[in-house]
Length: 364
Image (cartoon, rainbow, N blue to C red; front, top):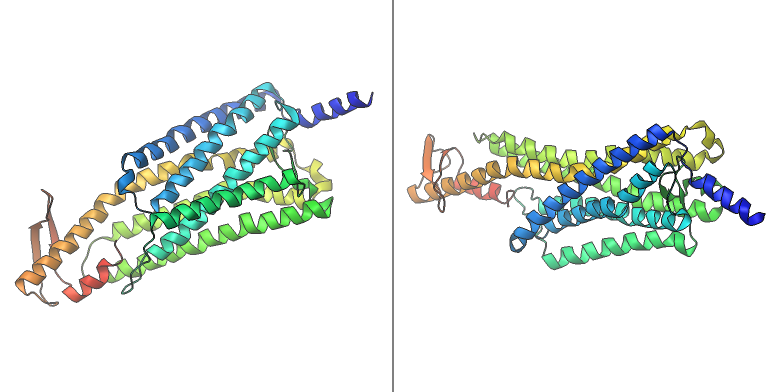
């Protein structure tokens, strides 16, 4: 009789709290998200593999982000979509632990990679007349290994007894048992430390570093524009990319974090939030694995040619000014074919050689 009651409670815990129609469309959505995530991030990995020898050290963080996104899509989305079509969670406690473990590893790795990526880009971006810091591949590789170990440690804590995994309120996914915050000191301390060290601090780092990058680029290109360089599009595109990456991640995960925090402090009032409302933030957060590769590809293709043109123009003007003895006050225009290309660029002369040398350090 007791074992039968246990089975009944387990069935109730993992039964979908949504209607079959909602489950079906949630499953369709997850299939689409999984497909787009795998295709988009696989394209990033293939592109990186083709030019592996040419990749700069910070670009390995982009590769790591693609790995976390595709890993989440492959290891988690099929199980959740199959459970949605089944109208109940498949596999019971073992698959719930597996799903929560994978979700913790990939989500913590993703947010920490974004935070480190922001810090690295902030340090790499120079502020005239100072140059940015140069990172070696070995350094970035060690940092990436540290990120995975950090995420794995947090994922193992619930299995070792600090905190726990459990089903989401709607019954078709598993994560940290947020409702346990008010039930015991064990759950409360785990959730509090996890929230601060794996959510709040990384988000603050992402915001401050990308806005710092935007400010550095604004100062650098503003000074260049004041000397008749018409390259405002470069500044706008690079700044917009930084803002979109940081805001995109925060927008995707903020509703889920807000609902989770509400569950923490209102565990006894969980019934007030309908299962459908708790489902929407979870589905929206999963979209974060889709748009990152598209952002990188779009801005890489639109900004790289302009930035390359700008660098070559600076090179041509520096060469022309040095060979003809033209000083800072020289006016007019110059048309010159840059070395190694068949393209001809028109550059406006209005900056001295000493000024150009100061500006070039911010472009590499």
